[in-house]
Length: 628
Image (cartoon, rainbow, N blue to C red; front, side, top):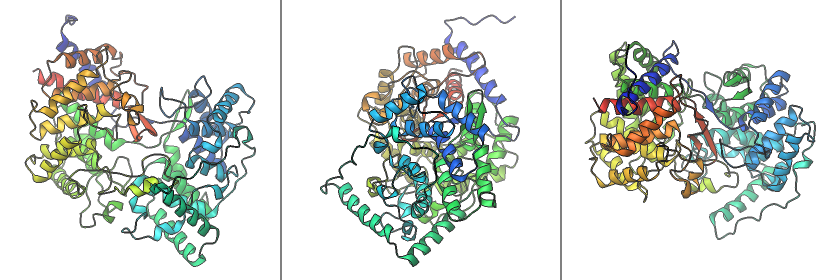
């Protein structure tokens, strides 16, 4: 009989924790080779799904009831809804949830509805909700289209070199803006079946920005655009509508989606319906079937994933399992590698507008998103493939070579990388009146750049001028406190957890001053329980940097940074490992209700359900491996 591990034996405890977590991760693999964890978001996804189905006339009583049950389960005691677990009340989210529950049959006099309405009025009412919420209200006659920012479909006709063309927007915003311009041109008004008078305050519109700021001049431009919208040039408008319709149809993916994400998906459905495409026709039938495949049903009801992440999750799982000691020829890794190779994107997407000379290569985030492969996923997939022996090694070598060439060609002028596009940095679009929610640009960021640098180093290109320029950019981006900003994960713990392993892999010594500054920052924000956490509010309030309840994923990111910096035996690392050991559940996983992933920094956040497992496996694998 094996003796029980000594409580004081940190390494043995780590081995047992790692083994349990690794085995659980292996059990989650699909027979086809991929992994996919749920992407949980806030209830606006479900509220807008109910409103979409009401607009289309396809609402189902059972679905509505299940969605309403989920929305109610997320309501806080004060009657509000937040955009992330533990976050503050959000006006627009509460408005949309309230409307959805009214559609599902909840009466305004019910206590939970009365509390929600009271909050909405206290926060300024419908009059202070964000533009995208007011667009939904306008669809149902509860807001005046005239009072919304101008969104003319003629924007699709602007060439890429003209400011404010659609390619000035980040790809997720671009895919949303184009169908929205079509919807706005129709100005539809569908019967909601009730009014929302109880959510109004009668507040006057906010005063326009001063002309001393760019926003003020763009407000004047918006007034001119709205005047044109009232009397457009009919031949030009017709041409723009046709071009927008073709643009939308061309970008529908094989799974029925647009970009594999909810916002452009639902607005494209609305646009095409208004253009005359029948609900039971091939385009919308596939679109709606695809949405159904993005739903999760459980005892709490029915909820919609804003996106799905099988490529990203599979690459992360492969790296984690390899770090946990699985050999490259392990059947799970071979199946994963073969599946990843089959997901390579070989068509030109929107990225080619700025980088038309490049040959396609790389990977997207989702099952089907050939128009929008991204640099972050591609870098992680290459790192994963390097840790495996797929069935066809020659196919692996060719795919990796194409992806590396594509990623190198996608760097921006400053030598760093964004997620989807190169040099997508025209700040003017952020100041437009309708750009009041979420990121609309895709600039280079430290986390994405770090993943590319780590990948290039693994390819033996640490001395390449491209890599050296990126390292210099990363060093210049270090915050005064020693951390790095994390665009796609929350936030400075994520950024620092990505950058330090990359810098060390690229030849920066663990003793270098930037590395030591980062280590000191991580030590300074470690929680008393030994873990790390960071609240999403850090995107807007620097006081939250590195502050928040400890989570398994964020603690693992901090450990990855410390291990790369040579701190395996340091006190902070030891306490972090103990935190993971003490909080692991019996099934080998960890609880993590917090949202540690990012869609739009500060506005839209994600709870990646696999993060709480895959990153601890990676960190513990590297910890145990470094002690052998």
